[in-house]
Length: 80
Image 1 (cartoon, rainbow, N blue to C red):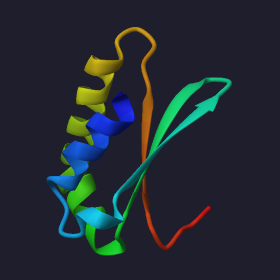
Image 2 (image 1 turned 90 degrees about the vertical axis):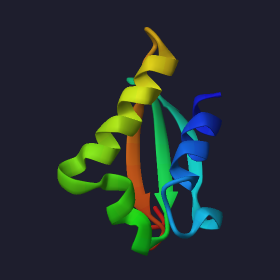
Image 3 (image 1 turned 180 degrees about the vertical axis):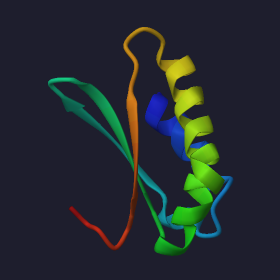
Image 4 (image 1 turned 45 degrees about the vertical axis):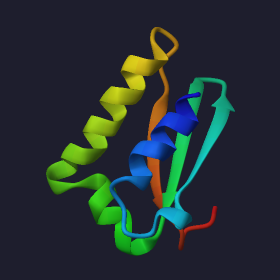
């Protein structure tokens, strides 16, 4: 549910919504939502001084509740 909600929010901000991919990775320290976007959209997703990225993280934290989830933004040029 968190991945789908975050993907929907990110697609509304970027110029290349078809390139948005959100993966939910389960690690020992918890869940990480990895957001991959087109390289031209990385600045839009992060925002000025990281404000947009912080807003995305705040929304995900509110939806996640106590379990929480980290959000990591990656451009599509860095595949792994």
